[in-house]
Length: 307
Length: 257
Ligand SMILES: Nc1ncnc2c1ncn2[C@@H]1O[C@H](COP(=O)(O)OP(=O)(O)OP(=O)(O)O)[C@@H](O)[C@H]1O
Ligand SMILES: [Mg+2]
Image 1: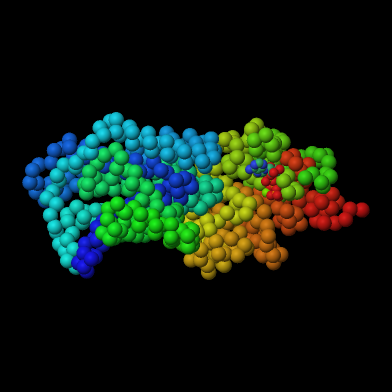
Image 2 (image 1 turned 135 degrees about the vertical axis):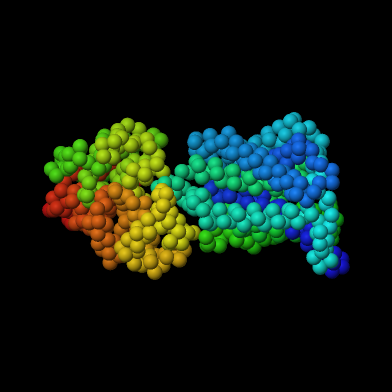
């Protein structure tokens, strides 16, 4: 592996890692407020992919679009991904989890429900949209834009990283600087005390799901732009992003970002060095190793301002 | 848990506010945890401007009474009235808008937030936090001003208790429910906290105070109630309770004659 190869692999890793980080936020936010491992979040991500592909197929992007048109298509895809992701997350919480919360169901029931909801949603998508992969309509010419130390960066890659960074900054701001964010952090730390301050827990939980869903949905669209969209697309990125959330310290927003980027880069180098068959081995080996020495994850024990 | 041997022989307190003028009134409150009935018909009143103490042994139902008053628990039967308006069944996050502040047992500050963030959480219910409230809390508790950036989980017990009270004050309560503010604190700090409670009351906030520390509580309070296994067994003016031999024996550690 030459030096410029390293940069190539790093670029791929950062692109992948940005997506993982954005998806991981959805897991970690929900875990923070409900101590729930929401395995159905991978299907929220998938919904975003379908949202984008459907919206773009409907508008039929022009061949050889102008820069402005291209930007419009991309924004439309992200918007549709966000809307569908947010809507599925909202509905998931209302239909699957809220009734359990009302009944004070044990944690295991939540977990089983999450897994059940995940199966239900991806099979529903398979029924609705068919089992063959859908290709994202061409929104722009995916050419090489510039080089970083000899590694080419394409339009898609730039969009993914920019959108990812923007979303991560936004969510960090929302969690740490807004009223919703203080509600989320208060519920994560002590729901009863939060209610005594006037925090409506149901509302905060619902909005937390939507926040994670909006971002997961955009990530689904971006992922689909890079590869393709199909009803099983949520599974592996979902599991990896979940692992990223655990690696960073589940419940910790900045931990999820760090975990996502780490696993993206590790995955990318693993594939480069040992081949595609080993793709997920490297990332999960890192997860196991880190948890052996730091069971709370990288930032899990940090006593800080982040939920 | 009713080892103190008080008979249920005392009528309503002589100075008890008439029900009409009461800020808070609990009427024949029954509260259950599953099959366990923790409150078996509690009635009490708190008039505007008063300090009322709620005494009783461990497990008597003091915390449960406060939780029922602040909407954390819904009573099975009975009524909670605020200024004569029924509020039982209203959840705690809505009831704070009626002017109830509850400083829960064990302080329950947000451990990973700073002092300042905790105080801001106290004003969560307000559309626009009042900067004067922060000044007021800082002048009542100067130590909180000095430690405003500190992560609350690392505060001492006394400081956490002050923070819990200050946080509740940030929500502009008219009625403050306090659940054992002296728990686990050194005598000097306890005295300090009771001084501040007196000040808070003088500034116009009504207090309903649950305490194990009966002598401190009764010296601050106008009236007091004694609970035993979910019922009110005594209700009287604070000085009368303070000199009552049964109270002195049960809560002030005096050997009865
Ligand atoms: N969540 C709960 N589930 C079941 N029983 C409970 C629960 N909370 C309280 N109880 C029971 O209700 C009764 C009253 O409890 P409560 O906490 O109100 O007592 P307390 O007077 O505040 O006691 P302490 O002085 O020890 O704080 C006790 O017998 C207790 O065991
Ligand atoms: Mg108690």
